[in-house]
Length: 451
Image (cartoon, rainbow, N blue to C red; front, side, top):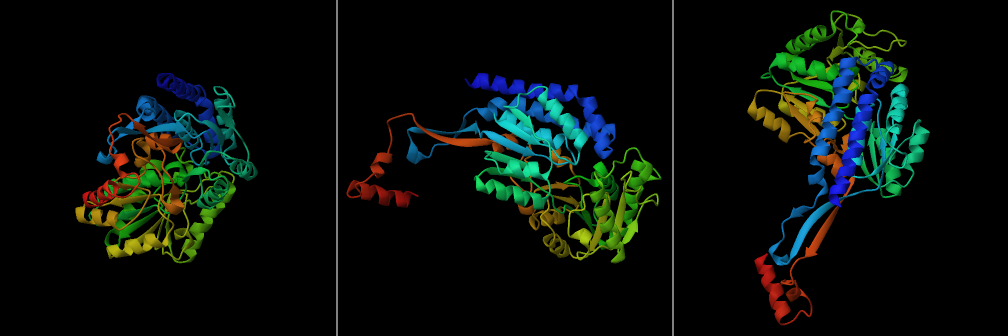
């Protein structure tokens, strides 16, 4: 029975991968239309991770679906204890626009591996990609297994008001609150992957070349529209100038002397986000920040929708850009002299989905970790923590609830049912049953001393 279920689920996952391969050219074209994503970036960050996730699930299905035996306490001799993962039932996945393929299909992999039926609601902000996803999934799955619903907020509100067994939402914190409220009406379990201010802590011991390479890549990937992108730098004041120079130089190396014209730089998803990011930059400059734009041209205009990779120094917590997730190709910088200042700054901001530390000082690295909280953390690296399916991915409080990727996704979409099974009539438990006098009282007093 278990072997047949494993075989069925592997077939489902393989069908999904074959469909992704079949629709690869359409996916790449749609991603370019919606987000201006270069082909290499789309392949590396939208499609290839899905193959790894599918292979990881297929290789581990037997272990995940099998009985997970746990120890038996001495007091329960005569019984066996285990946990079995069972499908939750019907699952709703609401996905975002920034990585519209990967962040739609990755949770789908976990939901299908766990044996659920799924309704998928991709983002209305990337319409070409959503249309391709509907075609892709409809080509291999019947609606009773995977159904795609297209539309905007009204469709999402209608779906979240329906009695699903689990809802997985990836998106902004404010919408996440609405999803959580709707799920509460049906006491539906949820996974929320939200946003947050993801700081990069840098002390004077850091390798600045390594810092510049990693931060410039992670920050300006997908035009900065990455939920775990470095949101802002918290730099020890004595090295601020050197850090800014190194990152500026790296921007030029990646995108050329005029980054705004680079084919490797994507565009902002729509006019609202384009204008929001520009306003954050201009308001920060008005409030005293200094703007650094390698190439000298900040934006291409709303028709094209590109904003050049740039850096803001002289930022303060009072600026609007430090009060909300940037989600664009601008890197605010704040400085510190005492390490305690870092904690004060982070505590004033929304909870980090990710936190990054660049340092060679063992003591400081440990102190930064011990005195901060975040969903994920990387030391002398950025972003790549999401690529390992063995690492549970998720946030804390306003940056998310629950965990995804690999086994964490499988478990999130499963009811982990606990079992206790009698395997022998030999048991001491009946000695603790009423009436509580004589032998029963003696046993209870003995147990109290034993515990």
